[in-house]
Amino acid sequence: MSKAFLALWNHYPGAMTEEYEAWHTFEHVPERLTAPGMLGARRYASFDGTENRYFTLYEMEDLRTIEHPAYMDLVRNPTAWSARMRRHFSDVLRIPASTLASGGRGIGRSAVVQAYSVERETAQAAGLRLAAALNELMSRGVLLNFRIGLAEPNQPYEVFAQDDRDGPDTFDLVVVAEGVCQGKLALARAALTTAAEGQLQPHCCLRDGLFDLIVAYPDRVFPGNRSQIAVSSALKSQFGI
Image 1: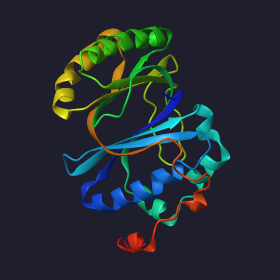
Image 2 (image 1 turned 30 degrees about the vertical axis):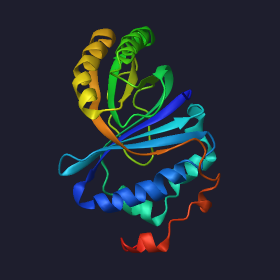
Image 3 (image 1 turned 30 degrees about the horizontal axis):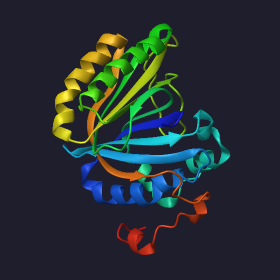
């Protein structure tokens, strides 16, 4: 797996599902994948309320990827469609993380995604102990794969304000665990949570969700320039763009 990843959670109004899916699938994520250092992405969702819950995972060469001028151009100069869609985001959490541990292969149809605030001094050792517990779940066929990432807390993001979640003596720790069957993964969620809470002794849980995979973009399938990501006028015209 990659050395770093970008984890993004957000809610979006259910009334705008069709437009969000079109924009996020055909413009937004493909644009991000034109930035040097972006290796691939997966889009996940949970459609179980008035607001859809989304999780997006970007594979990166390293954390410098999101500091590259090409990536910053995407952040600071959105398309007209992106600028319009940004107004409706809510409950956004963005965590760029370095991969601490991973296991397994393949892409699962469902994922349990959790984020915790943990004590900085013990975070790495605790994360590795959690990895051992997840490897045991994987050996029993409960999980297909997993990854654990560590991140500085409260990292700024120019697009959406994020409240400070914890102090400088903490790390954010992200767990992504995939499975081939949502029902089996849903049953395993309690065991995963117990293992995480037992090993990490977290200050708090920042996110805990079960998501279905919507689309996966394999490594380097897009050109290296945002101008080459062209969404058809026929698609955009459906939403008055």
